[in-house]
Every structure is written in structure tokens, then in C-alpha cells.
Image 1 (cartoon, one colour):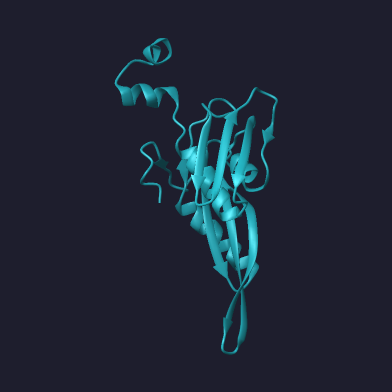
Image 2 (cartoon, helix red, strand yellow; image 1 turned 90 degrees about the horizontal axis):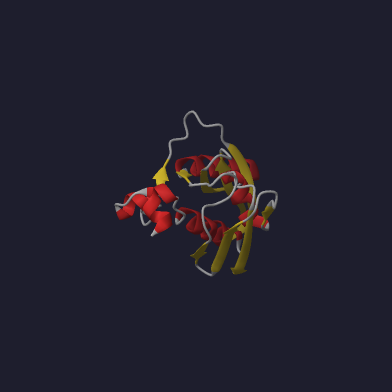
Length: 174
């Protein structure tokens, strides 16, 4: 799922204290010859609030099992996000389908200035000071994936120095 991101570091869920957060539950309807069949889909984000986060989708005939399936799916898609203290290393834009998300680092004490699905993802990562703007589609599925797109593009100074083959001092003084 995260193959297009060079810096995406996949994480195993064992040994982590993961907290799950429900982004949204939708009732879906399948119209058949015998009438309407109702089901539920749940978007779930899990994270350890220290830089590891994953998202998943669960579908079932009842809400509880849809959420449980979403949590299991999210645990299979855990990635490590580089943080700089309690914020992010740099400004980043992410997009998925019609949703666009812009996340901006903020000064200590600012808090998480984000709404809905973006806030849920950023809190699960463990970011405490960040500004964000969601544009375009407000569909929670797409907003969560756009937020992950932005987070997976983040790189810390050590990774940039390693990729360029230069020292850490040259990154800042060049």
C-alpha cells in the first residue's frame, strides 16, 4: 500500500501500545431482488501517539464487527512518521482523489488546529502542535488517505542528509 513512498518505514504491531480511534461509520445499502440489505463500513486509525500510525477499513453487517475488522486492517498497515518534538519537520501537502490536505508545523502550545478526519489521524500519530487545512472533498475515506499521503512524504534532516550523501551540517549550511 505504501510502496510509492521511499521513506515509508513499515512497523510490526507487536510490542506497541496502540490506541484505536474511530473516524467514521457509514451505513451502506445493497439493493437486491429480495429488498434492501444493510451493512456498515468503519474507517479506523490506530497509533501509539509516538510516530507510528495506520489506517484501516472494515465492513460488516453490524457496527461492532465492522470496527473490529477496521482495527485489524489498520494494524496491518502501520508506518513510522518522522516527528520533530511535538510537531512535524516541515510543511507538506497531500492529496488523494478529490481531497487535498495541507499540514504546517506550529509553535509549541498551539495545539492541533485541524478538523474531523485530519485531527483524528494527527492525534493518533502523536502530533500536538500543527496547523492544517483540508480542501476539496470532505469524504472521510479520502481525507484520511490524503492526510497519510502528506505524512508519508515527511522527511527528517537525517534522512535528507543520508539521501543526498552529505553531512547533517551541510544540509543546514548549504
